[in-house]
Amino acid sequence: MVQRLGGLKVLAIVEDWCPDVHRGLPVMAAIAQASGMEMRVFPRDKNLDIMNLYLNQGKFMSIPVFAFFDQNLNPLCHWIERPKRATRFMEEVAVELAKRKLSEEELRQERRKRSAPMGDSWRQETVKELKDLLAKVVPKT
Image (cartoon, rainbow, N blue to C red; front, side, top):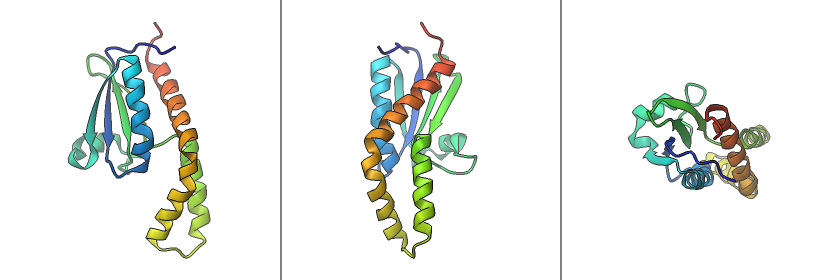
């Protein structure tokens, strides 16, 4: 059962070239539609003023960003980039690949190849993390 969250608003910061956006944005859009949230999408590179409010670790322009607000536009919480499990996986891959002498393009291709099979489980983790995050700030009805 989906909790109705009408009145809540979500701001999504994205770019169409980002694999994390391709995995995460459809998940967020489905959650917003099913729960009655209003969602607005902003391209990161054309909205750096907004992006700078949600820097990952205070310095990285990681996307997607999903920022949640109440009906009066008071900030509630935000979620950045990818599920924690996916980040751990990508960090482990980076450590392993650092040992090899690969070009930037070879590194990019290898990271994509290794992360591609993880897409479905990462989408499920995204749903779980977003649900847990919202449960902390939205009272149950």
